[in-house]
Length: 377
Image 1 (cartoon, rainbow, N blue to C red):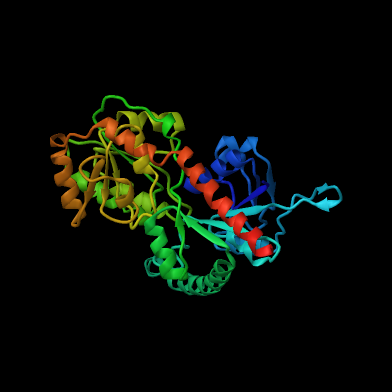
Image 2: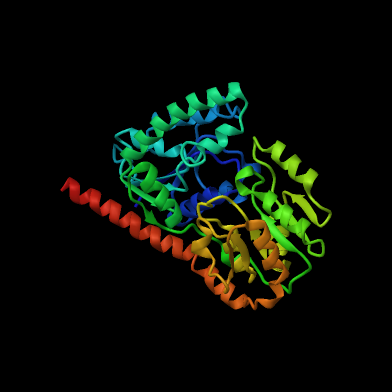
């Protein structure tokens, strides 16, 4: 079976890129994208066949996304080689990301399965929050941009043959904003690379530093816990430098920002921390709790979104209710009273392994291809 995978762009190390890498490696698929910057994404991509169609407007925020939509809408997915005189087509196309789904608009690019990490949140549930933070002129440009891009987004979604997604939480968003159902296939985590060590003297926080991650909750909680230490891993997104500066200015001495760290260093931090802290708004799914549990460590997270699907309250972590600052403080003060079993944490993490992801994906692909064949007959 010949498979093509289409992804927005490859210049970050995120959950979407991990999904794509797993698909390409395990299904020996060809990968189509716009920009590929090897030094900024996972090095394993160097070993897979990648076809690029670079964006001339990158990195102009808002503009390069529009160019990506246009290029994917005009992209014919084909290897451009011939077998016995016939053009070699793919049995199925898998798209991933916010913009790659637009390949579905072209009638030749089917059947197509789309892995929806989340409907573009600034178009839908985070629209008002985002708009409020913008200056007057930028706000009006933003409103026009969202109006246009949202129309394109809804059209592309209507053309998809099958939608799969990363959590029941995102599935609910898809039903709400797209009026379509999706099958949940949890994203892969390489649980084998993580290890457990005796806990050190610190709690750990891992995420992109952006307002939606609500790191200020963590800062304020540890301000009230001067005898505890928090290490924060992550760098600000392209429009969040102001937020990062604000956090650093407000942070007490027991909170340390480590910025970007190597994979080796991150694995060591997970292994030695007491627990991992997460505070994102309605997180799609969240790979960080899985990585913590794979390291035998619990995760303390807000009782929202995808955290509810990965964390078993009281066994592999704690789901913290509002008011968040006060309840995080209480949970951390009483942390030693909980008896989190590293074996239980690691057992939970294995449910989200790459092996399970590939098994589920094989079934999805076989069903979609089979249905396509039956329709032709």
